[in-house]
Image (cartoon, rainbow, N blue to C red; front, side, top):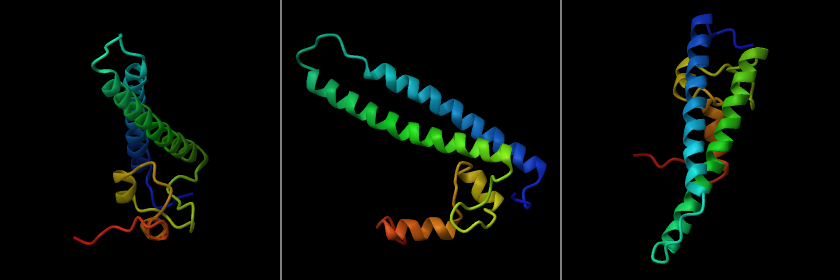
Length: 123
């Protein structure tokens, strides 16, 4: 259990997760509606197909994000929330406020990004 999070912080993070979940569900519903076949329009068929492909890709990304949010909400309930899934350290509250569904500390996430070739370019 992440002993560094106060009850108030846990409640704040839970509210952030629930709000993000609602927003994602709304966005996913809109994307699903956009996936419906358009009325026959010979001039816009290709453009409509590309739009539907984009909406499907966004829905797939949103589905993964929704799963991460649900996992975080479950972790809040079982007491494992706020612990890095890789190294087990406490994830700082400020990081959790920015990305409440994160499962990794900055160091582990950075290592993962570097191993996948996603290293951030210094500005």
